[in-house]
Image (tube, rainbow, N blue to C red; front, top):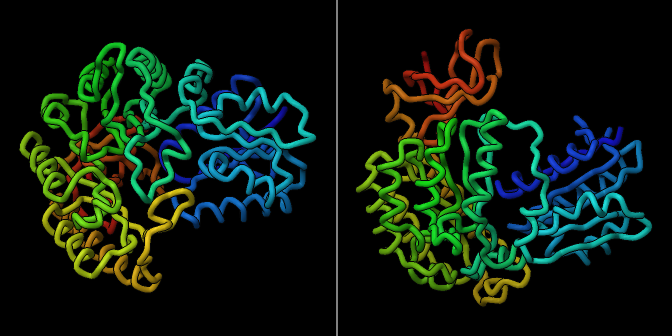
Length: 430
């Protein structure tokens, strides 16, 4: 019995890719190992969104080589594999296989080959990946991801996605519907559609845009909840806003990265919108779905960012009021335009600004959650809680909520009254 272990880094798209690699392996007779030390095949699905993620991979590769009692086949996949395959071969010459994100369908073939030298496949062509992945699925949870679009044409000056996942590619409606039905057959009740710019989706054969796709798949029997991420503000259309009003299974939550509140910085980032356009999109979504919750991404300390530029971000946050958000210090990435820009910001200034922003965002999240005390919310039960009879679920607005019940099971939907608020979650009572 040959065992494999997959360590995943980074975004939801990597989680999806890791799951599909596990599907391919289990369908061919391999078995998942519960511990890394027990594996005959170690797969590191890497992320390169920030420099710390790169270094974490190399540290884990070194430890894997030292700590395993076996001599496993070591595979590196993901964005670091795509962007730095030569560096991996130099710093970790014991790695046997290197596959870019669009080449994971070659995994079984390369595992069957001799490993006397490192095997590398790092194309940017996503057209074959999904067609070549297995048509069967291993175990699934109640809530799963489904990639519908990959790559990006926007070329933001801080971002490496065009160099790691290539140009935009959308799967066909037929292919997406087929996979969705299979997921539901495996017990999935909530699906999150994934894409680098998920709402730029277009099936040119059927002339179906993202709003049309949502309308098509929303009626799939057994689908209780539908979500999507990550959206680009440029592709928020009135049809998409209307979908949040008209499609019952589409949850009132949207992750809409803004990155900065300063028009000057947005232009340097090449984000293709300005502050006013972003605010107009927020207003339109709220017009069609007044209770919609907003999440976002922020980068502080982008090259040339002044105190005034940073205060523009603070004022935007105060104006929108986010239910949750993610914020990071700018990290120079190879091949990107921003890495070569003058006026790079000192790390201590970045850290100070990040602390200020995160404090504000955390306070907004607490204030948002506090509004739910005493309210009834619909809860989809996702997993057991920490203690006996405790269950953890999610509200339509993306919040984690913990309840106690001896009668409910994973996958059930119930109504709970919010009785308390934790820093990042709710406490509910049936």
